Amino acid sequence: MNLKLTILGCHSATPRVNANPTAQYLEIKNHHFLIDCGEGTQVQLRKYGVKFSKIKHIFISHLHGDHFFGLVGLIATFRLLNRETELHIYGPKGIKEVITLQLKLSNSWTHYPLYFHELTSNESELIFEDDKVEVHTIPLEHRIYTNGFLFKEKLGERKLNMNAINNYKEIEICDYQNLKIGRDFKLKNGTIIKNKDLTLDPSIPKSYAFCSDTSYLPEIVPIIEKVSCLYHETTFLKDKEALATTTKHSTAEQAAKIALQANVQQLIIGHYSGRYKNIEVFKTEAQEIFENTHLAETGKVFEIS
Image (cartoon, rainbow, N blue to C red; front, top):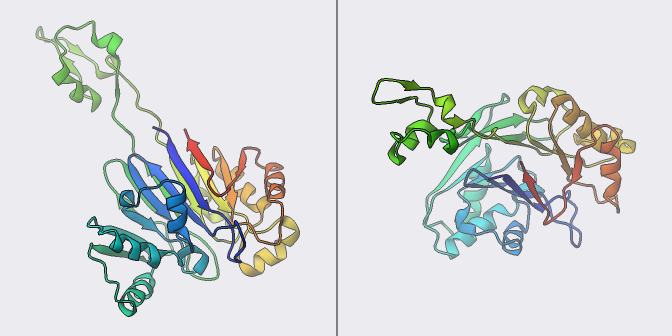
C-alpha cells in the first residue's frame, strides 16, 4: 500500500474565501495521522471523507493560530460523537495548557482519554514508535518554537516466493510466517534451504517529511535526506527573500534548494502568502532548481510510492 497524503489546507494565516490554513491527513501503514489543525480542519475532514474515529494521533508543529486553532473544536466534536478511543496530541510545551483551559471554560471535558506529549527539545527526537512506523521531530527555525515531523515506515516482512516454495512439498502454510520473518527452512533429510531462496526482499520503506513554517535551514538536510516525499513551506517567492528572512519563512527557491541538497524523491510546497493570486508561480520558481516539485492544493491527494 502506498503512503497517502491528503491536503486539507495549504495557505498562510490571512483568511480568504476558498483558502484553508495548514492541515494534512497522512495514511501510512494503517495509521491515520493528522498533521497541524488550522481553523476549519474538522469541516475539511468531513468534506474529504475522513472518518474521525480513525484519527488517534495529532501532530502540531507550533502554536501559531493558522496551525492549531482548529484543534479544540475537533476535540470537542469527538466528545459530541461519543468517542471512547484515546487521542494523543504531540506539540510544543504550552499546548496542554491552552487546550485544557478552553475545555474547562466551555465545560467541554472529554469522555475519552486525552494525552498530551509536549515537546521542548531543539534536537531531533523519536516521539512515536510501534512495529510499523516511527515519527521523529525536525527542529525548525521560526518566530516561536517549531518542529516539523518525519514519518518513516519500518522494514516490512519478506515476501513469499511461491514459485520457489512450490518446489518443496514439505513447506506448508503453517511455515509461511517463519519464512516471512527471515528464517531458513530445514527439510526432513536435514538439508537447509536458505531463506533468500524462498522469499523476496520486502518493499523499500517509504518516508514523509513535513517541514512547517521555517527560515531557510540547511541544518535539517541530514534529518530528511533521501525521504520519499518532502513538504516544505513556501510563503514567499525569491523577490521577497528579505521579508522571508524577517518573518522567518522560506521562499520557493529556498525550499527547492533544501530538496536538492537532501536528495529527496519529490517536493510538495505550500503555505502560500495571500499576496500571490496565482500559486503556479511558486512551482515555476521551485522547478528551476528541483524539477519534481508539486503544488499543495486543498483536496489534492498524493500517492507516495
